[in-house]
Image (cartoon, rainbow, N blue to C red; front, side, top):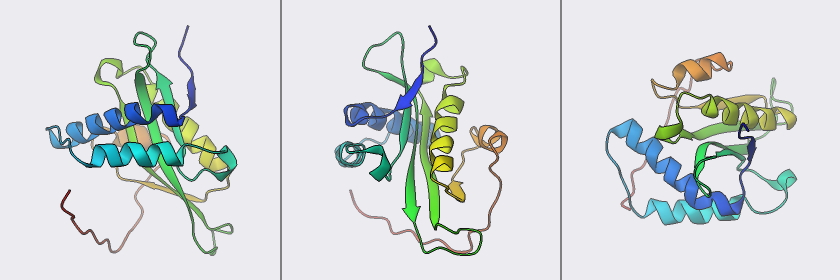
Length: 162
C-alpha cells in the first residue's frame, strides 16, 4: 500500500521539527539543535489547530509506513495576505519554507508529493505568487514544479541570540 499525503495536524508538530532539523543539517553540514526547536513545535501546534479555512500555515506530510508515528516527508508554507495589486487581485502570497524527506526515505517522490499538495492548497485559495529559497539539491524539483528566479531587490536579516 502506497502511503498517502495528508494535511498535518498539531500532533505532527514534533516530527515536523525533527524534519526541519534534518533540513538545516543537510544545508549546513552539521546539526544545530537549540531553543528554536521547542519554539517551533509550539508555533506548529498553534498554527495547525483549527479549521482549514482559517489556516495560514499549511503543511502536508507523508507518514513513514515502516515506523508508526514517524513522518517520511513534509512540505510547510505560509499564506500572507497583502494589499491587492495588479496581478495579485486578492493580495494572497505564499512562501514555502520547509520541505524535507527523512534520509532513509529519499528518492521515492515523497518531497514532490508533499510539495504538490501544498501548491494545490495555495492554488485553491487563488494565491498568485509563491516564493521559496532553494538549496542546490532541491532546485531541479522546484523548477519542475514551475518555480523560477524572481527579483527580490533588498532583504534585511537581524540575527538574534537564541
